[in-house]
Every structure is written in structure tokens, then in C-alpha cells.
Image (cartoon, rainbow, N blue to C red; front, side, top):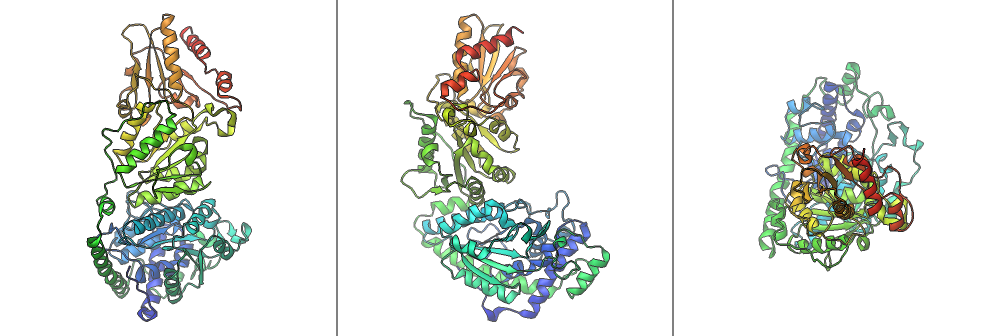
Amino acid sequence: MFNIGSKEELDFEIDKLGVNTLRGLGIDMIYNKKSGHPGIVLGAASIIYTLFKYHMNIDLDNLDFINRDRFILSAGHGAPLLYGIDYFLGLLDIDDLKKLRTINSKTPGHPEKDITPMVEVTTGLLGQGVANAVGISYGEKYLRESTNKTIDYYTYVLCGDGELEEGITYEALTLAGTWNLNKLIVFVDLNNNTLDGSLDLSSHEDLKKRFESINFNIIETDDSVKNINEAIINAKNSDKPSVILVKTKIGAYSSLEGNFKAHGSIPDEEEFFKIKNNLGLIPTTFEVSEEVINSFKEKVKERSNIIKEEFNKKYESLKNKELIDKLINKENTYNVLDIKGEYEEKSLREHTGDLLNKIANDFPLILSGSADLFSSCKTKIEDSNRNIYFGIREHAMGGILNGLATIGFRPFGSTFLAFSDYLRPSLRMTAMMNLGVTYIFTNDSITVGEDGPTHEPIEQLPSLELIPNLKIYRPYDVNELIGCFKDILKENKPSCLIIPRNNKEISISTSSKGVESGIYEVIKNDTDNYINLISNGEELGLVLKVSKNLKEIGIDNRVFSIPCIKNIKADIDSLWKGHLTIGITLASVEYLYKFTKNVIGINTFGLSGSKEDVLENFGFTEELLQSKILEYINK
């Protein structure tokens, strides 16, 4: 890809004014709104300015250009810096900047995907952007190798030194070094401060040794445009991922320069004028030099034409364009038509793996990753390079999958349901960004047995249902499983597929089509006197057996399966028709309270023992469950 940024091309005078203009514009936004984070705006402006003016390859006429460089502001509280760059490039106007941190503006408090130009991911939760960047860079390397280098962009990410304390950054960056993502460049805003005080209060880590140990190229620099530019050139020439440690001063040019209090200290009028004077700027708000704007935009446009020409030449000579075309056209949904499960006696985990493999054969955008549980979750795509080995790093897995989804892939990630807690912040961001990531969580109940309470999920299922914009699918058998895959792949949305470890049963009454409606009758009843039983997943099999037993003793009943609660559009009360309705779940009872207050479930942690003994202890045998249902009937 076209590179620019040699020493001769720098214009030191205009760049000094440009960096200070960016600082001043950020302070204008914060001062105007009386809200924000001036510390990073004053401290890290030269990093973003240098990167975008001299290195970022973007197409201002097509911000979705597939081979553009990606920039992730993981330190999302520095959002005014990115909004200032957008203004320099004509992508935002002054009115947008004046609306910083207001409802329905293009300039929210932290960068939000699909709201602001050139914001690739939603950031703010520290560390998430770093993991997203690793995912985006992994996708670049995969595409580079799959398209004869037609795709070959750089991924840049800016984080703070305090942010590197978040465990997800270590998880993700260790993988970046392991995978040798040599087109990933990480800037660290090295100001030695956190919100509560000096970084030394909580960390004495030697960052150079840390990054050396995980196979990174390490570059140290001050915050001058000249030296940052040279550092980026150095990083681009490395055969490893690079970290650029930029020594900065939090709150530079303010009364709190170098002081941790500068992080979120909003300047009053006196301080505002002092900062503007120290920057050599006119002491009014939102005044920007046209010379700065024109110089900045000219450099970016100069590269833009060249990168488009280079890409078009490579694209035209490429023999197999399918993968790139699907990404360009955003064809990230898949119509599952005639796919069928193998109806032999297999666990639902094995059926899941079979179906995933069949679909992946025809849908090249699917990648499958696992947190060291391919062998148990059965989610490996056989005979392919489309498997991502995350190791025991659930949190980074979620963040990296999010990054992959932003560039158009349909990634799947798998682990045990009890371990979903380890990736909850990443999963929340999946839902918030509305990304087409599917999490396959297996070993979904107390039937894990001997592994005991640490591995037996109780509260996870209902708590996942609480996350907005996230569909939870819990099939009972392969019939419903097929319906889940159809529903998941027909749209590009966040989803979780919850699978038991043991279940091999298949019912002639279940339906793949029932998944679409979210709830449907598995066992019907034509009499006037009956009860309703509702359940899903593995325990539905037990309910079906008890249903039969109840009918034999004269208690008519209907049985409903609820494979996807968020798919339900029907009026729930109208389904019950005024009859006693009982929910049965191997999870916390709150999971089914939206359907009925009569729920048989588990409100304690599990136990270690055989599957049969654990089920009996919690009252989930045919005899014991039937007895509990009769108690409700006889109340």
C-alpha cells in the first residue's frame, strides 16, 4: 500500500499550528459543553494529528472503502480529538462540534459506531478498543493471505498507559504477537497518570519488557510531529506488530499540566483563556485557520487517489473475487434453505458442529473461534484456515470477534455457558454495536454433573436475556437447532446459541419453524380443561415425558417450547387462555417470570455429582417434577 511520511514532506510551522489548533478545538468543545476530558485532548493531540495527516489511507468520497486504514480510539474519552479531525476533513461542521455530548448529536461523549464518520467501533470501556483493533488486524491478515494482498491496510489504535492495566489488553495483545499481526500499530499515550493519581500507585510494570515478551516491535518517542512520524515509518517497516510509546503530558498547556487532576477538570473562563494563550491561539471558541484545514486535507486527498488506483489494479487481476465482493456489498447474511440435520443419535453439540461446517462450506464470511474448547464445544470448521485459537482468553475473544464483525465477517465464538461471565463486557458491546457475532455457549445446566457448581450455570441464562438487542436461542433438539441457524443467519445481528452437553433426544413434535415465532405448541390439547407447561432446551425433554404421564392420570395439558424469547411477538396471556401455566427451567426461576409466576427452577448454585444424582437432588426426575406440578394444580 502507498506510504507517505518522509522527513522532507513535513511542514513544521503549519504542523505546530495544526496540532495546537486541534488541541484548541477540543478544549472549545469541552468548555462550550462544560463536560469532557481535557487531559488527553491537550496531551495526545500530536499523535492523532500526525497519524491522520501523514499516514492514514482513507477515501473521503467513500468512507467505507474496503482497503482503508482503520483507526480505533480505544481511549474513548479523547473523542473530541477525533471529532476535530473529522472537522479538518470536512466530515463534521462547527454545529456538530458545539453539540458535543448532547442527545442525537454526531459527537457523543465517547465514540459510537454508525453515529460519527470514521468511528469504526464504539469505545469507552477501556481495553475494548484494543481488542477490537486486534480483531480488525487479524481480519486484514486473513484477507491479505486470501486475496493475494489485494487487501493490505494498517490498523492503528490509541490507548492510555493506565488502560493497559485492563486484563483484556494483555489477552488481546498477546494474541496479536502470537499471530504476528505486523500491520497492527498501537500508540500508547504515556502520561503516567490515572484518574485517581500517578500510575505508580497501581503499576510498576516495565512496558518495554512486557511488549518485548509478547513479540512486539517497541518504539519510544516524544510527542513531536517529526518524531511521531518517524516512529510510524519505523513501525510500518517492522515484521512484527508495533507499539509506539509516546511520552506525553496530561493537560499540557494548562495550569494542571502533568497533574492527574487534568483528566476531567473542566476549564473555567480564566483557565480557558490561559490555555488558548499558551497555545498561541485566538482566545475565542471554534476559530480555525483555513491554512491548517487546507494543508491537512490536501495531504489526505493526495494519498486517497493513489490507494484507490492501487486497489483497483489488484482487484481486477484477482481471479477469485467472491470473498472481497461479499465484503464490499455487505452480503453478511445467509439463506439457510435445504439444510437438514443428521438424525442419528448424536449430542446437540455434535449436531451444532455438523451444521456449522455445512453452512461454512457455502458461506465464506464465517470464521469460528474458541477459548480453548473446540474439542468440547464441537465448533471447529474442519480442513480449513477459518478457526481462531484464542487460548484461555474469553474476554479478548469477544472483543476480537467484535472487531472481525465490523469489517464484514460473521464470526462465531464458543466456550461454556458458565464462562460467559468472563466475556460479558465484550458481549455487551456486541449488542450495543449491533454486530453479527454469534456466541455458542455449551454445557448449559446442572447436567454438567461431576464438574460441580463452578461449571453449572444457574444465573447466566436469565442474565443474558436482560441484555438489550441480544437474541438468546436455546434449542431442545436438532429440529429446533436448524431453525436457530436459519434465524441467526438470515439477519446480521448479535446472538447466543445455548447448547447442552448431554442431550441426544429428538422429538417428532418439535419444529424448526417454531424458532421464528419464538414460542410454539409442541403438545396440543383439544379439551376445555387443561394446564399449560412451558420450557426450552434440554429440560423440555423431561417436560414432554411428564406431560405424557399427566395425561395418563387424567390431567390434560399443552406443552410450549420457547427456543427464542426475543422472537415472541404474540400476546403471551392470549396463549394461555386463562388456564394454569407452569414454567420449568434448569436455571433461575426469574428467567420465566415474564410468562408466569408459577415457575419450577433452581435458585441456588449446583452440586458435584453424577448427572442423575444432581437432577434428583433438585427435583428434576419424572416423578419429582410431576409431584411439583400436582402441588400447583391442587393449590
